[in-house]
Length: 375
Image 1 (cartoon, rainbow, N blue to C red):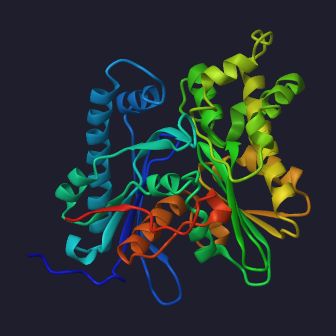
Image 2 (image 1 turned 180 degrees about the vertical axis):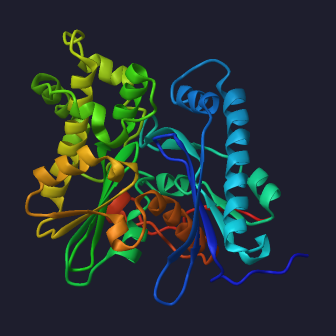
Image 3 (image 1 turned 180 degrees about the horizontal axis):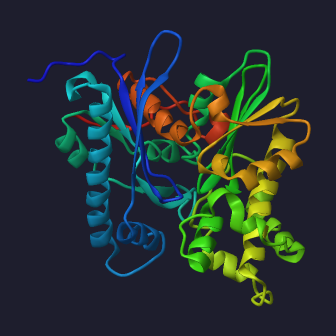
């Protein structure tokens, strides 16, 4: 029998988010002063896998077979990232308490259809445990959905752990494929919800018209002009104005949805649409901050959107009374925060500590999130 590992041993977090560009992994340590990233590794998706993952977000033929094989390919990349993290830190598998492997979300419909709904993340945690020799914690969202919650966002409790400032109200905005906001109130309460699309629409539109997977720094969008009529249509979507708790994904905000909004505007220049999509992301995020963070002094931005210069400038212009900074200024690089969060969630799961809150997802009560697959 393998020796047990201490509960406070380092954990690895693996995140392949809604942007579907690849896998970020971090090795997170747990010193007395709080969680600390010891190493980061990234592996991109090849074009074939990315196309398949995107396709699996929509109904199609032979989905179960294709999804199972895509999950196996995803786990092979997960295992590469784990190996890279161990090599960079000089640790062995025996020194790691657990891997928090989020999986790739392909459907997210909490509360829908039968009143319970579901959320699906492609993954094969059993295979990952076999491949790495480390306990794996996966399927973080389903228990929250089963308890009446949205199953997302799950990162606000980690945000509180690393970004809260006693006596100050701070916002944490994660801009991945979808954007989500955490409100860390001065009085100690935590609120979190999805704001709307982050990079998903911009990335998809950029890929279609330039062949590039994303608009580097927002430069292509900056060459266009915002289309007020289109922006008004996008802002009219009911999700943007719904009260929390709320979550969303590519089930709603996808290119077919965008094409429907473009009805009658098909002759516009693609760069103008890109500029409008950037304005849409900035405006929906700023709206969420203004309506939910009274007295907010600082907005900490993480995720891939933090590297979009144009988007950061647009956010700052819409929030003139708030200091808009990236998470790097608060101690964690923007592309490491979500992976670190799932390492932290794995740490909590192996200790049987709850990580859900009614004020974030609407769950009926605090729950331990994640299913454990022993090595």
